[in-house]
Image: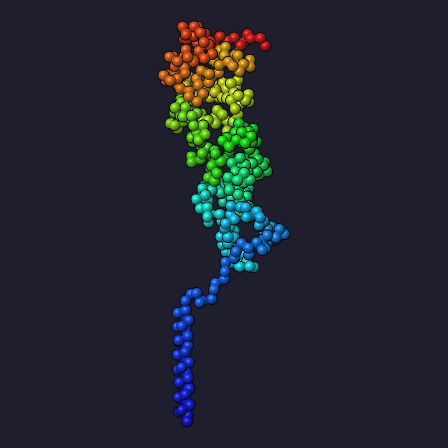
Length: 393
């Protein structure tokens, strides 16, 4: 009897073990579709169910910070086609555990992020600055970003000066950065700034000269505003003037690496560029010789370093033309009247306006008639007559 019971128990155990093995193998062979479904991805409606509440906040270092997302505004934004979790990648469920990580725009905008990190703003942030611009400072909230083609966008072309000015026009922001807020106000009063304010979509805005993301220091050789790069930068809009300049005596000197030779901004200014018909412009007819050309050609530095004849400004001021200019004439000849503007060449160059063969044509622009035609050399020798000392006060 005992042996029979033992046999039954052994048979039961064998059957039980066999069933367990069969169950495990069967489970392993089940198709994935029959396994328990994974937790579904949160949709925008799930997130907005909470975040569309304008009173929703979170605690950040003891301060209550809004985490409200306006659903209507988000639907109008360029990011509307995305799912919230495309950016907030570590948010899997609610309540959020762990807390949502800081979003990186580089996840989608890799190339742009690379450019940004070569610029001054990113480098300042890396050094601990709390004032340097990040993506949202220029583009706005990630939930409200509009395409640059939208006139309401912060980076719509005509809005860019005001966007940059939100920082660069604020003294308290610029303090301690080594830069002045005056730059922004100078631009506003410039020929470019006034044209943009009047609705022009052609006049230069900040990003035309500085680039949008890869904003580098003027001392950086790769910067758009590095001295030797300025003619090319200005040439993006002023193509004909740049071609003339690059062929000129100044442009050729710059191409050789001569840092003493002027580029566009040395004559026209930087942010405060004015029209040549504006009396306060550095290239206005009545101020050109003394204010602009004279800053280089009145001293001895060019003579000592490059053998360029000095005393040009003083000889001009001693002439009839210079005397008339000092008395307020805005039609009398100045440096550019005789030497050209962007196309200045040495007198030995056959294309120069002051080459001997071209003097009749150059002087004849103001002095038509036989006196010039018959003897231009004699006429030019009679110009410095020092009449200004005896002129009526």
